[in-house]
Image (cartoon, rainbow, N blue to C red; front, top):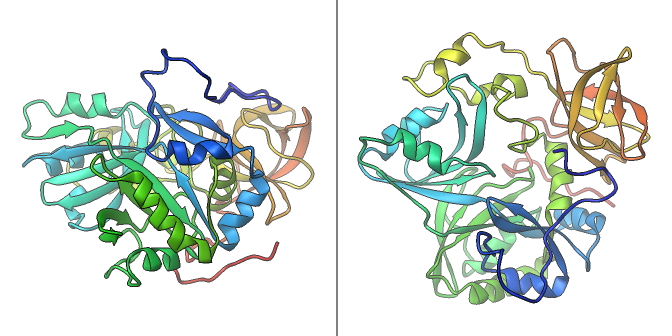
Length: 393
């Protein structure tokens, strides 16, 4: 969170030569992105495109809001298989994993013993004794291995890569790519298997944008080039294009979707950042349960509405001349027409509507309002398909 000064940032580039990138991993669609002149962020030791020289962030944002956009992510799926897989995951996560049915996804939130957050992600139940956990950036593998001692469970890297298709035309593209039919059932957070030109893919009704969308999982045995050509052909009539994380970041801030390691970390409990609804307090024992039982239920995370400037990541937040928090995410929303961000405050003594001063990209403090997240679509009706919201640029 402290690497950027608001004027420059450090991203990965490709140059001739070999060596010293052997701990990093390119996704299967790297060569397809290369002509677009990508700039990559390292996420879970995987490359994830932030932006492309051939498309502006604002153009990419409107692509997501009005048509459909594809992001090849850096999410890192781990596989949990064995008779004790469910028991281990129920110990690691704050939700009751025993209630997750085969063919469904769940939001997996993991804590340390003191209630501090480790990481979040999407948990897929592929069978009674087989799960994938598509985790955000963080060291979850070693944590899971340490707590699996004595259990009948194997934790492995299936070398699976996750891509997202998001936007109002996303499901039309899925239908076209799947031979003209939608998988059934395919409600919010469902898992399905589809056929893309003779290749079976696992897809989920999930995403990181709060737009209508789905994700697909490219496995080692897949022909990635054929998958892309098939999806590209299905998506062209609906405006599908590849885009970068910078544009998605604007939309996820609008939606109040949090980023592990910045919006929350080991110093915050789920309650601190408004994730208390993902704790099943009446389930059996899980790591962090005892600490969370006595933790404050008040959130100290808010949205930032800044009319005249863009909040700066790591910028300070002041109230009555005192520093009271930090900006953990910032952008300018083309749809809302003003600066937006996420504020993590040092205490819970603030309410929606409070006025503060926020450090912004121009190097100055600007007056801003703390607001309840999300900025709109409070009931998440857009990704559920219950609300058609295609804004005019």
